[in-house]
Amino acid sequence: MNFLAHLHLSGSDHDIMIGNFIGDFVRGRNLKEQFGEGIARGIELHRAIDEFTDTHAIVQQSKNRLHPKYRHYAGVIVDMFYDHYLAKNWSTYHDQPLEQYAQEFYALTKYYNHILPERAKRLLIYMTQGNWLVNYGKTEGIHRALSGMASRTPFESKMEEAVGDLVEHNEEFQEEFRKFFPELHSFSVNWLKDL
Image (cartoon, rainbow, N blue to C red; front, side, top):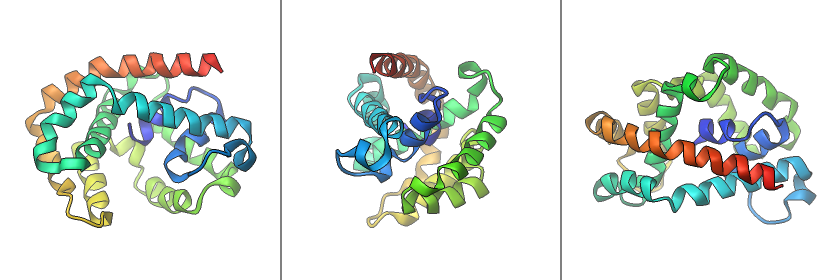
């Protein structure tokens, strides 16, 4: 899953939300010593969500459709596609309007600026300026995000072409997301409860 899903699956705890947001920018195991308990839990939740997603049969169906063309980038693209469907159908999954949710998150990051890894800080500049969380819901927003990622990969990924696959196989990807996301949501809720 990508940024929007990770944030949504954090619930309302701000520490967990920020930890989940920076999960891809943090290495190592001594998380509590580095960040404190709440943010460490958010990072651990991020890792648990990634593992659940990467090993799920429905997600594998989505990846298999993309694998012949995009190889190991298929998983990254599916994460982006699923964020697209979450943003596009946000009111099905959340009571608060997406625009308001996104603006509150961007504001929240300012309070945590002192603990954010440098790479996360740099990304946030672009994320806020381009309002990525909202624009993921538009085909052109996903195309812009995937093109940006393609320009930063060391090898040719063809991710800038993936929006064509999203349009061509929209019904299949959307149905896979619709089946998968409630399972991921239940997993995340239970993971947080077990803490």
